[in-house]
Length: 150
Image 1 (cartoon, rainbow, N blue to C red):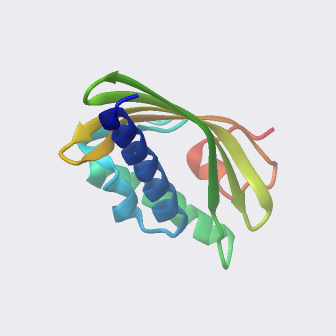
Image 2 (image 1 turned 90 degrees about the horizontal axis):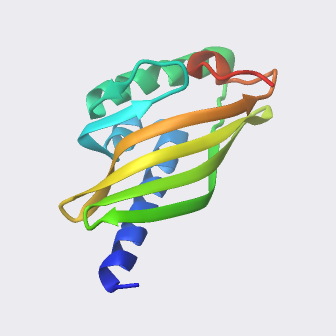
């Protein structure tokens, strides 16, 4: 593996961490900044959101819905089994699994299927497809994200 490949992988991991940490803290502008200018977020059963502003607006509806259902919403994403495939010098495919915990405990879980592009010194999300495999019946987020309850 070359130094450029190692750097790309670390930059991608950094973007993944920034995305989840920003989202868990409700900093949606910071989360949306993890997407390329024409980046796409594809949520289950949703139309596509394109570009950081549209992505931020879409996810703000999820956050507001969570606040309506809980006086003190807690969200913790845990991402694992990250597989990075560098397809071109400036393009990568990334697959991973996620678990989301809220104040009720395990809330929902699924997979991310991502395309990343190098944008200057950073690697940003060009397309994120969220595939949710299930949710607990008491899920705090399922209604807003159109997640099927288990």
